Length: 178
Image (cartoon, rainbow, N blue to C red):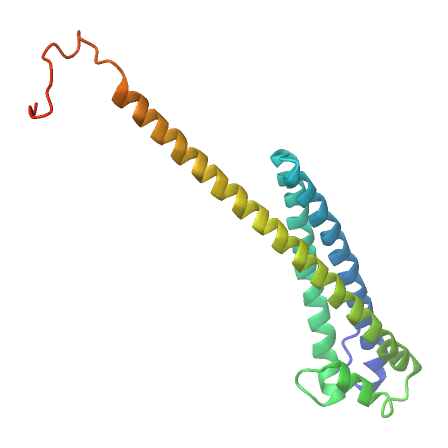
């Protein structure tokens, strides 16, 4: 990415912005595939594989953070050219008529479908991750119920076992404390 902030840099910055969003789209698609895979492992009660896939998802989120920094750097570079603090797609589209750079115009034309596809993938990802989270919550609730039931069964077993006469030589009665 060029350090120049003049109008001559607009095409390069816009192209870099498109490339950054395209890289993000690829990473989000990878994350979506991993999220679906993790969900399937969870459904099959294969927690080891679920955790392995989850670790790979974490690596993707790290890369996405770096990509977001690249997007923001492009937007900051375009801000003075467009005359705004926070450049949006509308600002870019309005600037096409003012900036006589075919690379800029091409990049701005490429942005809407790219951003729409990115939005779609992110919505799918959100749905899959939400369903997985719900599966994990249900699993946790079942596990808690099993633990509670097991503890109750142990207490009941201890309460109804015959007392060991060697450890308690004195018989106990309900009204007797000791």
